[in-house]
Image (cartoon, rainbow, N blue to C red; front, side):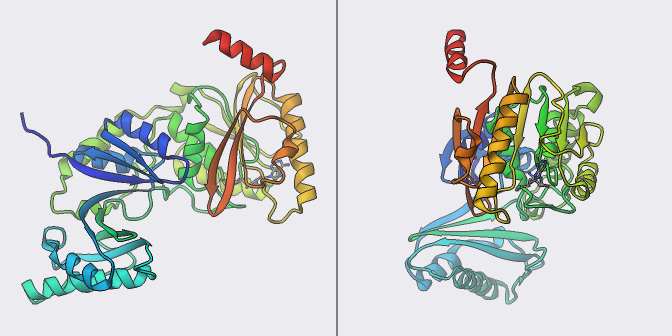
Length: 395
Ligand SMILES: C[S@@+](CC[C@H](N)C(=O)[O-])C[C@H]1O[C@@H](n2cnc3c(N)ncnc32)[C@H](O)[C@@H]1O
């Protein structure tokens, strides 16, 4: 039997999603999983590398480290970079780009570190071949990631290029659309089973609805992306890639097969017209129903399920208005949504108490730069105390 070569990979993600990403990797068959800050390290072969790029819902990019060394100044950086056998990863016809991520007192400007790295690569090529490959900012063939933390330098091949949250379905945004990876992570953190009713009553551009729909139909989020830098690697296995795509397509379910209710609503009709286009682009129109109702008027369509949303967080509203709005949301949940498991991403810490409900879980997440809490309110009959007692008796 041919032994497939295993190598280390790092999948990067958003703060708070490391565990759900590790779970996704486990399901894909990854070994040696190690959770890090905003990243998960694992061992893989080419098959898992390709699957990670196509299937993972909570990864931003997949990196393959090729060198690690220490450097405290530009000279050490240049010398060590020049030692790497770049000709194994890059040829004279390739264009390339270095993406720097630097947290170091020794290198204060990430662009400068990237520049020195580029100089060392180009000088090595000139010395060996009298010619050099060119840098390309927009659509490079090969992408390198330069990570410097303190004096620890890691150089990796970036297999994904454009971040994996860019699924290609969102042609137009809306009022503060969620990052697709964050939305998928929120759904995973809520432990939605992909079968029970799923509601986003303030759906905006529809990110949560679309991510839920893709999960329900078993559609890999990046199945339709045509370009990944890994396709330009010297060892790219076209046959294996095609087999993985074909297999993924075979496993997709139809809307008729799954029968799950996924419903979105928004008070803003113009927004919903854009949302409908996004849903169409994602190819899941049959699965998702949209309504143009305020949260107050929305008629609860089932006796149980998940309701997940991120209400406006008050950049345009004053704190007083936000408190009133959040208090109204809390009252509506208590009075109309009994039986549902509610999750709210709230990015206004001052107003969180206004919901008037005690969260069973509070998970720290970032929506862009905003420090948020993902709050869970299980809306079961009776008091929360009864609910917890009943749950303890069952388990
Ligand atoms: C922060 S955005 C949601 C973004 C969305 N998750 C996305 O990814 O695009 C909040 C949305 O709530 C809607 N909204 C505000 N007040 C509402 C209300 N009372 N009822 C229903 N929708 C409301 C806004 O029109 C806006 O689209």
